[in-house]
Image (tube, rainbow over all chains, first blue to last red; front, side, top):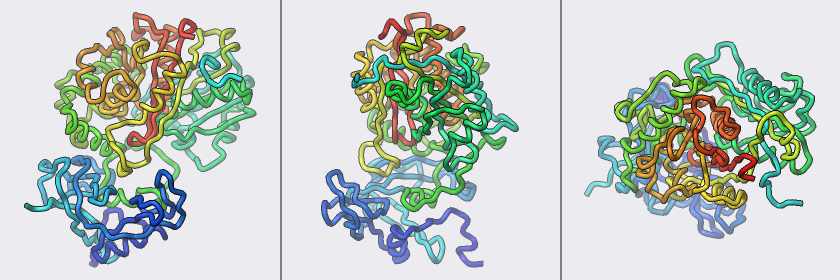
Amino acid sequence: MSASQEYRKPLPTPSAVSQPFWDAAKEHRLIYQRCTRCGTRVFYPRDICPGPECFGVGTLEWVESSGKGWVYAHTISYQPAHAAFKDDVPYVLAVIEMDEGWRMNSNVINIDPHDVTIGMRVEVVWDDVTPEFSLPKFQPIKG
Amino acid sequence: MPDTLRGAAAIVGIGELKPERTRPGRSAMSLLAEAAYQAIQDAGLSKSDIDGMIMEPQLAEGSGGGFNPRMAEYMGIYPTFATGCDAQGAAGVVMALQAAAYVQAGLATFVLCGMGAAVDTGGRMRQSSGPVRTETSSTEFQAPFGPTVAANGWYAMIAKRYEALYGTTVEKRAKIAVDIRTNANHNPMAIFHDTPITVEDVVNSRIVADPLHLLECVMPCAGGCAYIVTRADIAQGLRHKPAYILGGALGISRANLTHVGEITISPVGKAAKKAFRMAGYTPNDVNVMEIYDSFTITVLCELEESGFCKKGEAGDWVQEHDLTFKGDRPLNTHGGQLSYGQASTAGGCAQVTESVRQIRRHAGEHQVPGPTDLVYVTGSGGPFSQQSAMLLGSEAAL
């Protein structure tokens, strides 16, 4: 049985706009968008700029992230919406703020869930869940 | 033409069904229609009087366009102006503001507003929309990481960050759930009417998403709720004491918690400022508060942003005040959504109908004994995505 047949959790459903993110993820590169006109950093992927003064359309370019950031907010999940996560309980759901100033949802792993704190420095670690998809997860930066 | 809604319109009829865990065999449309029938009769009107309609199609069967004609056909009510209200949990309040604008502008005279929700026996909210298309939403970047049931996870993150910033933990948040439950214990319509709780019960209930405990979170219910809005001059001639719409607004901040900005700041602040300014009142003038309580943390942040206390101080503020209907700061007098029940977006609607009951002084056992001339009511949708604020008042508050 291949990995993709065994993997029962929801997979990303890329759109034309978000496909580059998942293509890069497969190569273990974490990328985000930045507006060439106003510099706004953007996530989730889109094709228009949400910058406060900007009307840019098609002005967002993909940029590689350092992969480092900090835990902006988090919770320990005991009651997942999707049954496939039940065996993972308790696990950490978090909003990670990357050093470039954009935020994404992810999990903080390789640590006891109760030891995760707001402000904790984290780095991306790739979870190759299927041959098609690698998910960016985060672990504490040692030292 | 007046440049404000202040005093232009009033709520003159209310209807609601007792929230239940499930209503076997009942559709959301039928629950909504039953509440609507009650509201029309409560106002002393007939179906043919209703010429405006605002109903929330999101959670009803067969949504996907043309909801108002379907409801019209289903109930035998044929308005000449009708729209939806896509404001999630904020819609209970927003519908009243929309309706006030409609009647003031002459688009309609009697506007029927309402929402209903059915829940399957498994406890899951019944939705007809199917898998959400993720293209431009962030769902694509949430589902793979295992989000929690309902909004629990998002509000848990807000609560945990709030704890880290201000040191307010479950022991303080629990007071809200306990006082609100006391109110429910005096309201036969409340789903938890027969079950008192203590702070210890809240603290010892299981954690659903750290740091939120089970008794800090709403439970999905089936139910329906509706009300009728008309012009103030017409309201005065109807059978009940009118509840005048004195001011209101909606604040929108984001759709997702990953959007930039401090997530513990809730957008009701923007709405409250505008609502109080429009009404010509301040938080100190408010007699009764019906504050949207999807979770205990929701109430803490709304109290602060609305101006009842300073940021970070709501945990202490709720200890210092008696929030029961007999108390010095009556809050969620029907039992709140936490203990009255949350039939999806109809839960926010029920906070509006409870406000009307308190102004009419028809709340029976849970009637606030002191003055109820000015009620502050809020709504909240998404993870502090959009929040509404409204001031309703008696003739004395006009």
